[in-house]
Structure formats: C-alpha cells, structure tokens
Image (cartoon, rainbow, N blue to C red; front, side, top):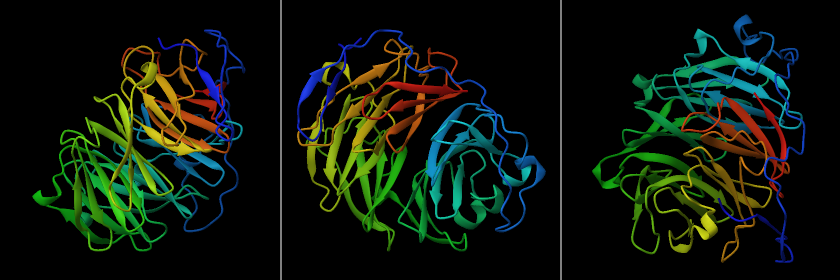
Length: 372
C-alpha cells in the first residue's frame, strides 16, 4: 500500500502531509435511498409505465456514467437499464428500463442537450432517451450506421455523436435526426483494440489498447490526421482518455503511467510515472473541479488517484478501501459534479461486492457516501 496521502494547494503549490486513519468512515453509509420520479414533462411521448416505477437503484454491473444538468446517469451493463440519481443528495430519481429501449449490455453514456445517448455493446445499437421524461426518442440501428461492438461515445458539441466501434471504426451520427453521416475505417487508421474516444477542436482521438498508439481523425472529413506513437509518448496499453483545456490525458494500464499531449499538434507534453505506487494499473480517467482522477481497478484494493494537471503533474493523494469504507470494486467510470467525484463500482476482480456508486470529495478524497 502506498504511503499516507498528502493534500496539495494547487494555487500556492504548497504540499502538506495529511494523516489518514485506515477504515475511518467520515460520513454515514447511505444504502437504499428511495425516491419517486417527478412528474413527466411531455417532450415527445409520455414515459411508459416500465420507465416510471418506484425508484430503486437497481445497480447491476454498472460500468458507465454521465452528468446531465443536475442528474447523474449510470448504465447497468448486466441489468440492461440506466439508473438516474441526484449528484447532490445521492437520492434515486428514476430508472430507464423496458424492452422498448433495446438496451443490450449498455457500455457507454453521453449526455447531449436534452437527450442521453446509450451505446449497446451486444445489441450493436445506440438508444436515445429524453432526459426530462425518460421517454424513448429513437433506437439507432446497426443496419443504418454499421455499429459493431460500440464501446465508447464522444460529441463535438450539439451537432454530432461519434460512436467508437470495438471492431475498428468510428461512426458519426447526426444528433438531430439520428442518421449516420460518416464512417472512419480502414487499415490506414491502425485501429487495434480501440477502447476510448474524445473530440477536441476539429479532431477525434482514439486509444488503441493493443497497438500502443493513438489515432487522430478529422471529425469533418472522417479521415486520418496522424498516428501518434513512439517512445516520447510511452503508450503501453492505452486505456482511457480525458480532456483538459488544450491537452489530452491518456492512461497507460500496462505502463503504469499517464501521458499528456497537446491536441493541436499531437506533441507529447509529459509522461506522469507511477510515483509511490499511485498509478499501478490506471484505467478510467476523468477531469473536473480542476483535477484529473485516475482509477486503478484490478485486485482486492482498487484505488482512485488525484492528479494536478501542471507541468510537471503532481499526485497529491491516492485513496483505496483501507483509507475509508469506499467500497471500491473494479471501478469502471467516474463523473465529477461540483466539488464531488462519483465512482462507479462494477464489482468482481477480487474486491467487495460492487454494484454501487461511491461519492467522495474531489479536493480531499474524503468519503461522502456510498449508494447501492
């Protein structure tokens, strides 16, 4: 286990040692909070009865998260459903479930405007849901857009949704019509087990887990810009990607590091090493509240590490289950709302039971609550 975490004042650059008492629970465990959904607002059609049942979290192999306004959405890959909860109180707001949504192993979420898009990995479809009503807007099929093992989503604002297909392509979807408007595919793109995608400026960046590269694509023409590779990036099983300003941050699961690069040029900025064993197997990464957060999911003691995005970057703290009763268990996704970080615990991999979401203070790492 790593040494006791430190806190860091990003404005002054001062670091100070903070004592952590293993097993200390600093906030009551919140379990089974129930809430009924508010009245539906008829944006398209009224939400069907199956989508407006009395609210229970129903977490079942949760593996993706998205923030939309004042709501947090969590995709349940095993339950073929989406849970909606309050990121301020943790209260359950509602569930999106039912055969009309065609959920089939939902693997990614992206909130865009008034709607939520859900990538169905096994079903090879994308489901669009109205956030206000939890009503179905449309199901976009593989026959229309050539989805194949969709694993990640990105947007460039309000115009397009980009769907990363695990078999090696990117599909562009017009968000106003649901029509496919372009596909990037072919050997020149060097897709090899692609895992994550992000849109920055006019380009898309895709991590290639087994290729140890990043593919950059022009989002207008859907053609290759460049392949990023080489020792300066230290890519080694690049897994997840997050943006901060003009820069992109990529976790290297096997390389035990995080790579920062400049989106406009593709140039390497820095490689953040596994200092004090704070980045043992970094997977999911997200940005919010002035920080980056990386999760190292495997094993019985997964952890979340805070990264201050400076050059050189610093790692003020790492938190694992021996610090507080976080109930981290194979964390698969994170989302930041205000000053708090939400961690989605899928379960398995030798940890606690999972099927939960942990809320922690983004600045200090201190536990706020666990809902499940």
